[in-house]
Length: 397
Ligand code: PMP
Image (tube, rainbow, N blue to C red; front, side, top):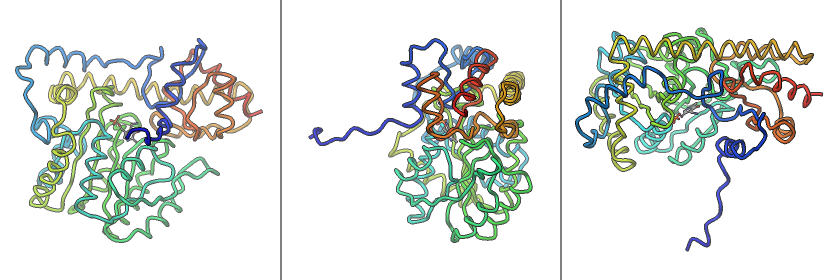
């Protein structure tokens, strides 16, 4: 039977990572996969995580199943991190949260819920977006449309194009937005633009689905939630997919959450029951460890302060590297303007390099960049920035 099975193409990003691992060049540079790296190229375990794990090792008393929707202390902390404890969404009990295996799990649970409860509704995603978005929602059976996002001429947001497209979305359609640190472009709407987006969503009765995988890695925990809080108007419904892979460095523990905000508390109860139904037939209930770590850190003033400091260090390094890269590019005599890299947020930027240049960098210099030209800024360091700029100069000439 399996004779008829065709080999699927490798994942566009994870496949590249595999090629990097097999490359024997000692000077190879990996700017492909979206993982934070410190100055030494290491993806560290945060100190606050280690401390929380020590506590958990001593206090854990059972390995019995979690409830379908996960740890109650964790899901409460997630909501408070998103909105702030006093927000109307929380005091009115309009929000429910389920713990999921990573942000990807949250997106898939959201997709299955939407396909079940609102069959035929279209989901609109930015062009470009994280390549797994179309995979996930297509697998869930949701029809997709795109809205323009990246303006090649300015290396900024094509806000007019985006709004023009979104105005075509009929009532009830789902609008997928990146909460902050847009992947792959690093370009986010300004607070004023978020307001205009919020107005359109409200007036045209659209459902926003916020993918929030990088809270704290742009300008700060609170600052990065500005778009989310702009959309969270009285009575407005929304879905939010959280991930703690990046901001807690908990990639392989698979820690995420899906928060659904209903118009009233009564509807949120029904939504929660549907989310649990989706989860039960999917993975039954989530793993505990990563969520227990996040719950422990967020629930302890000392550990939380330590986390905020460590997150701030990661953010500062990324922003420092953006400046270093732009400075080095101009210092090595490249005429092309790369200053936009400094305005972009989070781990990613669109370098503007095309597929041919990306291929040349990989084949001749062992510098790994995704085909779209997206670079993971956190993969750059003092140690490799000169070699990287040299490579870019070579492929641009
Ligand atoms: N959304 C976006 C935009 C991402 O970049 C990622 C991770 N690359 C995710 C979701 C998924 O994160 P996780 O690893 O927690 O599943």
